[in-house]
Image 1: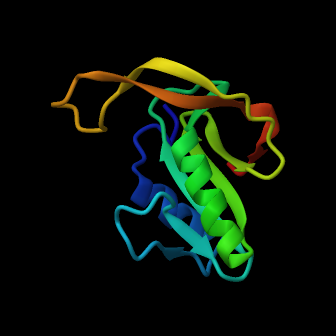
Image 2: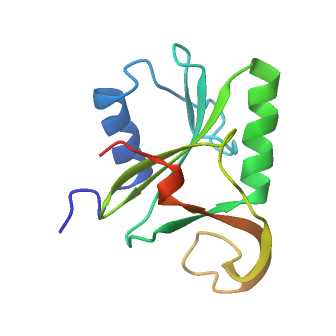
Length: 134
C-alpha cells in the first residue's frame, strides 16, 4: 500500500510544505475554489486526493475557470495537484491540453449521504501531462 492512499488534503498540504513549497499558505476562505498558494513561486493551487490511482485525473470546469480567474487577478500560475496511491502529480493549468465534456455520473456533493448524481463539465488530465512530485 502506498503512503498516499489514505491522504486527505491536509496531509497533501503538509507534504507540499515539507518538500516543495515551504511558504505555502492556505486559502483564507474555506469555500474558495482554490486551496492554497505559494507567494514565492506565484502558484495558486487546487488540491485533490484520490484513494484510487487513475492515469487520467478529473478536473471540473468550474474549478478550472475559478482558479484561472483568480490567477489572472494576481498574476499567478494555476496549478492542480493530485495525490493517488501511485504518487503526487502537479499540472500547470496554463499548458495542459484540456478537452471538456459533460459527465452525468458525478455526485452532487462530496458528502457521502447525498447520493444524487448531476451533470458536470469536466476534463480528464493524463498524468503524462503532469510533473510527478512523489
